[in-house]
Image (cartoon, rainbow, N blue to C red; front, side, top):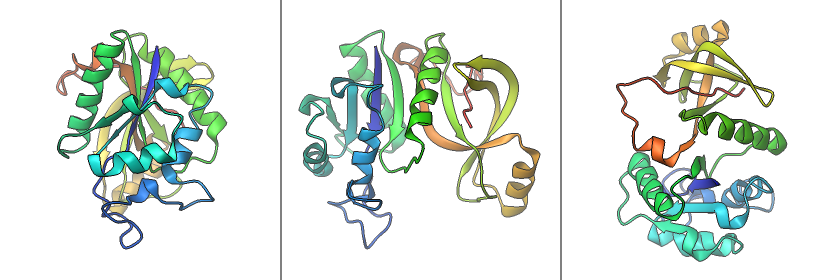
Amino acid sequence: MYHAMIMAGGSGTRLWPLSREKYPKQALKLIGERTMFQHAVDRLSPLFSPDRIHVVSSAVHRDILLKQAPEIPAGNFIVEPDGRGTAPAIGLAAVILQHKDPSAVMAVLTADHYIADTDRFRIVLSAARAVAQGGHLVTLGVQPTEPATGFGYIQQGELIGDVEGQAVYHVQRFIEKPKVEQAVQMMDSGQFSWNSGMFICRVEQLFGEHPSTGESRELCAT
């Protein structure tokens, strides 16, 4: 089965003073009448039913987020015992999901991004699942609109092919927060995407990954 895992942790320090420890960015109504977390949940329908949407959060945020998305089963909210960053949170979620569904494909998604074209986003997630089911770690890229220095970048390698209308590439390398001159060069080259921080893979394959192998196939959807 295909499961969505929304990473909704954080200390609430971003966008201060709008956000607070008890009301982080994802719990705020920054665009329209829905919170960022509610937008994150809304755009997953109908690709993911509520019982296949999971949320990783801190204990202080769980009840707030549960009230904002009561359609998600309370048991699908995973509370971090201690905030240790993104990688441990994903690891915790993967361990729990593997016990529920050993053959699961997991989409690790964000709780505080605004995505205008939700139909396209669901198409990309569907294509990513198809690639991940082949045993590949998939990451999503975003077409840059400016030479931003605060984002990570993905350099596209060899074109693998087309999956459900989406171009699939090997990843050549990742570059974190470049200086402006480098960002301009990368954008002009047309070979780089912004790193969305979202990825898709089989849970069992995630446990076999090692950062030094570089053997996984990746998806850059622009």
